[in-house]
Every structure is written in structure tokens, then in C-alpha cells.
Length: 370
Image 1: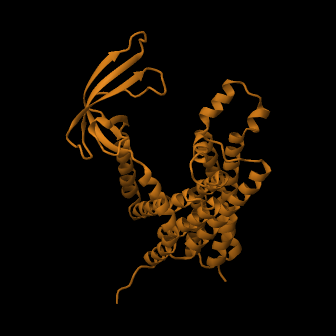
Image 2: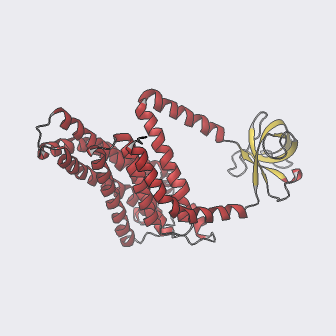
Image 3: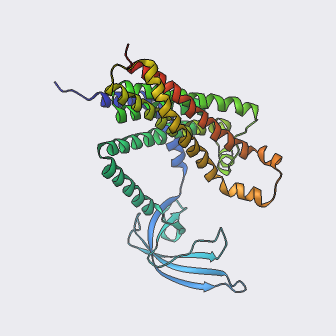
């Protein structure tokens, strides 16, 4: 009789649970995709000719011969036009020979003369970077690195195939994101830590920390009148013909954003207690919990800085803009976008801090001398 690994059984059960829930949302997303008539192809620039515009010395019009490398017209050549102006944000695409480009057809008949230049191709650079990242994970981490790759792929599938289609389908963002977080947490920690007390403690600690961060966000969001319209993307979503809770997306983003850091801290504390307990079976619950708290305190400072610095890093252009126009601090701190980023960073850090004593307590109870 064949025996299946416990981890595989757990993952299959979770997938079977989320599959029925995601069918409707995925179908809805596919219907939206089918309404699009745009088709994208890849091409390579063979030759570029430049024509300077009269009366505008910095404006350059380019005529490029492009070889189509994908699509129904693969192998055929077309001529595309491009306008470039140095220092212009919207006319900054400069074509060169040998460059890979993306072309778009906005006509359902797929005629060759209806294909236009869209942008330069950037996906290959991203692909090479991903390969380097995975190779380093395996070379440095060995078996653990391979587990990390598996968990990353699983988390990506849950987000792409369940969470995002469900949000686009109009389901409650906080509920869907919370379910997605649980689905990601359990297999990830079980694969990395194994089916044992360590993983159980880390799962409970992570769920508690992320849950606290979500609840705090809801409370402060009401108190601070956060709208969720803190980015251009949110405003564009509002104009879509979809029933999307923009404010709920704000809270959902904070839950997902804090998930990684909280998971890291919880597993680190649980692993430390697990190793201490294995080396000394005579230690009681109080001794193990104190040891876990000491480890957690050291991790807490660096991880809290990681969260805050990540949010500040993404907002550097905005902060420089505010400083450049010498805006009053009272106006700055009361801006929706600033208040949102502040809440995002602080609530995530609070969830991280809460997860430390919870994980330490659960792990100590599970592993300490009874």
C-alpha cells in the first residue's frame, strides 16, 4: 500500500478546499479578459532611422524596422514609428538596433498594418533575475532553499488564482485576504518546519499577529477616516465597472504586507525554543518561554525596522516632494496618503511584536517539561 507524505496530504486538502471557492471568481476574471481585443507580440528592432522634428531640437522621430518573433505574423517585418524627447517622461522610449520590443494589435482582424509599437521588452531581464535568485536559494540553502521555492510558488498561485480574482469579483477584501493568508501560512510553515510542535506554534503566532494587525487597521481606519484612495491605482479601480471595495483593499493590503515579516519572526522564535528543548528536556515552560522572548526581542528590532524602512523607501519621492514645496507639517500628517502609510507601517510592526510572546508561550507549552 502506498504511503503519502503528511505535507502533501495537507496541501492537497487545502487546495481542494479553495478550488470550489475560486471557480466563480476565476471565471469572472476570464470573462473580462475575453472582452479585450488587444493582442501583444514580441519583436526585434533590425534598423532605426531618426528624423529630427522641425522647430524642436530635442524631439526625435524614429522609423524602425521590426521583425515579429511571435504571433501569427512571426518572421514578417513591419515599420513602426516612435517619438522620443530627452527629459520627457511620456516620450522617453528610445529605440536601438537589436532591442527587443513589445507590439500591440488593437484590431480583432489581426491585420499586419494594425500592429503598433507598445514598449520595450523587460520580461527577459526579470526572468534572468528570478533564475539567479532561485539558483542562489538552492546553492546556499540546499534542501531548505528548494522548500523556499516551493512555498513561494504556492503563495504566488494562491494570490494569482484565488485572492486577486475573488477581489476583482467583488467579494469582501478583508475576508478573502484573511482566508488567503491562512491558506498561505499553514502549508508554508509545515513545509519549512515540518509537521511538529514548532510549526504549530509558528502558525498560531503568525495568525495572531496578522489578525491583530488587521483589527488595528480597521479600528484606526475608522478613527482616522482613511478612504483607501491613496494611490492612482486605487482611483483607476474605482472607475472600473466592478463592485470593488476600495477601502477594504487598503486593509487587505496591510494584512498581506505584514504576513511575511510576522511569519519570519514566529518561525524564528519557535525554532529557537525547539532547539533549546531538544538539547535540554528538563527545561520547564517558564524557562523556554523566557528564552523565546529573549530571542524574539533581538529579532523584533531588526524586523520592525525592515517594515518601516520598506514603507518609507516606497514613499521617498512623495516625501521629497512634500519637503521641496515646504508644506506645513500639520497638513502633511493629515494627508490621506501619509496617514495610510503611517498606519500600514505601525500596525504591521504591532502585529509583529504581538506574535513574539504568543509564539513563545505556545511553543513553550507544547515543548516544555510537563
